[in-house]
Length: 356
Image 1 (cartoon, one colour):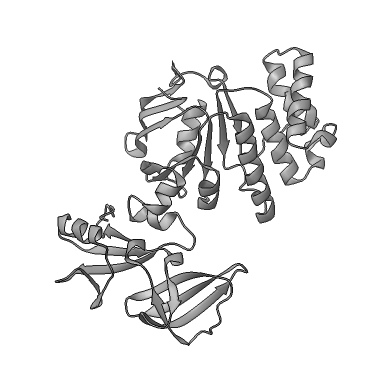
Image 2 (spheres, rainbow, N blue to C red; image 1 turned 120 degrees about the vertical axis):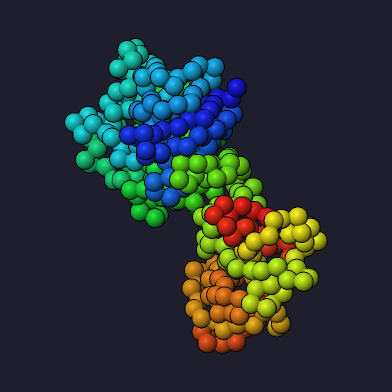
C-alpha cells in the first residue's frame, strides 16, 4: 500500500446528486499528486475527504497503513494550505507558524526552532514580528505554507493555494512550492484548475471530470498520449486542434482531404468500431511551409518567445504555435504541414476515447 490509497470513493448528496462516482488512486511515498479539472469536477470534494473535512458515502481512504476514512482531521497527521491563507489577524507571523504546534503541546524550544527553520526556508525571517495585515499576498501565502511546514506530517494538502495571487507571484510561488517539495520529499496532494500548474508541479496528475478520473499518469503521459478527447483539450495551451473526420477507402478524410496516418494508426483505425472520429493535432505540431494544407491566416497572437497563429483551412480553423515572430499578416495565404506521428485519433461519441 502506498502513502495514500483511495479506493472506490463515492460521494452522493440526497441520494440523487453524485459528486464523486468511484475514485481509485494509489500515491507512493514522496510523490507530488495533482488533482486537476474544471470547476465542479469533484477535486476539492476529494481533497476535503482526504483531509477529514467530509466523509465518503462509500469507499475507503488509507494514509500509509491506517484506514482514516472516518477519522477526524486532527488524527490524520496532515497539514493543509488553503486558498484563503486562513491566518489569524491578531497574531504575528511567528505566532501563526507556531500555533498548530502549540495546540499539540509541543515544547516551546521545539516550536521556536521550527519557526526559525521554516522562516529561513521560506525567506520570511524578517517578517516574524509582523501581523498578516502588514503583509502582501505572496508573503501571506508563505506564512500559510510555513505553518504547514512547521510540522512533519504524513501528507501535505494544498487547495488552490495560488489562485488569489497575480500572474507574476503565481509563477514565483509555483517555483517555491516545487523547490520545497524537492527538499522535504513529503507526499503532497495539490488541487488546481490551472493546467500549467498541473504540468509543472506534479509527479503524477489525476485529470477529473464529472466526479470521475479521466486519466492518471505523469505529465508526459497525459500530454503526449491523452486517454480521451476531454483530456486532450483540457491539458495544453493553446488547446489541441480537433478535426472531425470520416473513414475513407484508404484511411481518414476531412472534407474530402486525406489526413496523414502512421501504420500503427491505420491498424488502430481498422480495429476500432465504426463511427465518427476526431483527428487531433497539438498547435506546436503544425509548421508553416511552402507546400501542404493551404489556408488563410486569420489572426496572430505574438507572446514574445513564440507566436500563436489561427489559420482558416478546408478542414477547419487550426491554431499553430511557432517559435519567435511570424513574418506574415492576417489575410495572407499560407500552407501548413505536420508529421503523421504527431496526430491523435479519438472516438467522436460521448466517451471520446482514444483510438490511436
